[in-house]
Length: 218
Image (cartoon, rainbow, N blue to C red; front, side):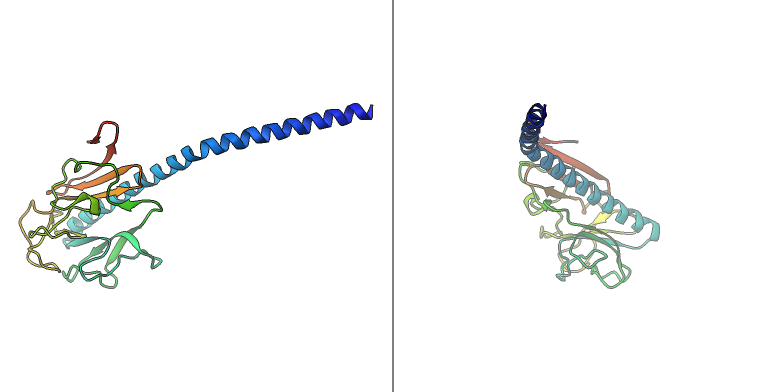
C-alpha cells in the first residue's frame, strides 16, 4: 500500500517538473515579444507627452499673453532642462517673463523625463513626417532652425500662440514673420519611430512610421 502511494507521489513530482519546464520554455519564447510591446508602448507614450507639452506651451502663451519657450536637450546657453527632482529632462517649458529665451530660476512650469530606451532621432524613417516644415535634419531629433538654417533645440511661442524663429541670434534675437516656426521632433527606440510635428500656425500632430508601407501615418 505504501509503495503504491510513493509511486503516485513520484509520478506527480515528475509531472510537476515537466509542467515547470514547459512554462519556462513558454516564458523564454514570449519574453522578447513582451519586452517589445513594452518598449513600443513607452515610445508611443513619450511621443504623446511631447505633443502634450507643446500644446501646454502654446495654450499658456495665449492664456497669459507671455511668450513661452520649449527646450529640447540643451538651450543656447548650455543649460540642461531639469525635472522637479533635478534630473535631466527630455523637454521643459518655461514662461519666459523677461524675454531672454533662457531657463531662469522659477520660470520652468512643466517638463517631461526621458523614457528609458527612447532617444531623439530616427532608426527606420526615410522621409520627413507630414507637415514637417523645418529645415533641419530629422536624424538629429528636431528640425527647427533659425533663419540662417542653423539648428535650434528650442521652440518659441509668442503671445498669440504662433511659433516663430529668429534671425540667427543665440538668444531671442529678432523675431521673424508668422509662418517661420514649423518643424518636428523625432523619437526612436531602435525599432519604432515617432514624429511630433508643429505646423507654422501652431497645429500639433503625432505620426508613427509604418515600416512595411514605408511611410508615416497622417
